[in-house]
Image 1: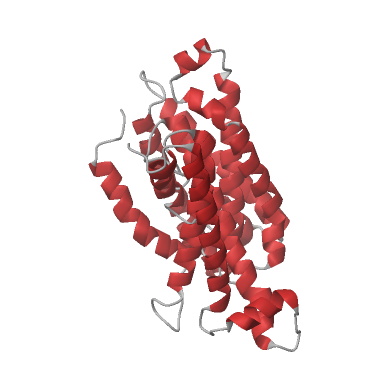
Image 2: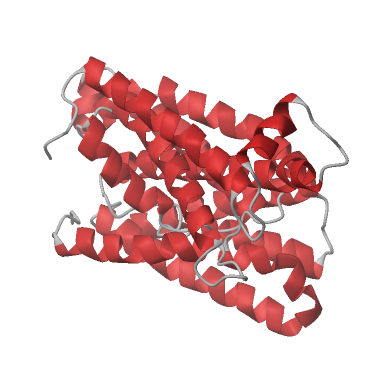
Length: 337
C-alpha cells in the first residue's frame, strides 16, 4: 500500500497536525451539544473558573470528562487493533471481531446484574478478566485442527464467541430486567455521563499500554515477517506475542470498563493509519492512537446532532462508519487463509 508520508519529517508533521486537530475537536466537544456554550466560557472554565456559572460547571463536570474519555478510548482501541492485526497478520482483526470486547462486556454485565457489583474499580477488574477470557478462548478455538492457528480461523472463532457472549448477555438481561438500566451503556458503547473520576481509574493503565506498545513496536516489525524468520533473527516470539496480548487486554478491557463495547475502531483506524505511516509499527502505533482519538471524538460530537434533542451513543456512530469499511476491506480479498 502506498503511503502519503514517505519520510520521518513528513510523518512528524502529520502527527503534529493531527494533534492540533484533536485539540480543536476537544474544545469543540466542550462547546457544542444540546446546550451551546460560548468559547469564552470554555476558556474561562480553565483559566478563571466561576462556580456560579452554569456554563462553566457543565464544561468542567460533563463536557471535558466526556471529551477526554472519548479521546482515551479511541486511542486505546485503535492501538489494540493495530497490535491484533500485527499478531494475526490480518487487517480484519480487532477487539470486537475477535470477541474480546464482547467477553469483557459479558463479564461486566454478569457481575452487575447477578452479583450487584457497582464499584468502578471492581468493574474495571472484571472487565479486564472478561477481555482476557475472550482472548484466550479465541486463541484456543483458532488453534484447533491440523492447520493450527490461521488468520481466517481466528476471525471465525472470534465471530462465534462474540455471538455466544452477546447471547448470554441478552439472556441475563431478560432474566433480570431491573438491571437493564445499570448496564445499558455497556451494550451500545457510550461516553455520555462519564466523570473525571471514572477516567482517572483506567487512564494510568491506558497510558502504560500506549507506552508499552511503543516499546514493542520494533519487535512487532520483525514478528510480521513470520515466526521462522523472527526466530532466525534471534527474537523470542513467544515473549513478544505474550506482551502484545497483555497490552491488548489492558487497552480493550479498560475501554470497555468505562465506555462499553465501542466497535470498529480497532478495525478501520489501523487501515487508515497505514495510508499515512506505512507498515512500520514505530509510526503505525502513534498514528493509530491519534486517528482513533480523532474518530471517536468526532463521532461523539456528530451523535449529538443526528436526532436532536436526543443523542446517539458513540458506539452506534462508529458502527455506521465501520460496517461499510469492514465490507470494503473484505471485498478486496485481503483475508489470508
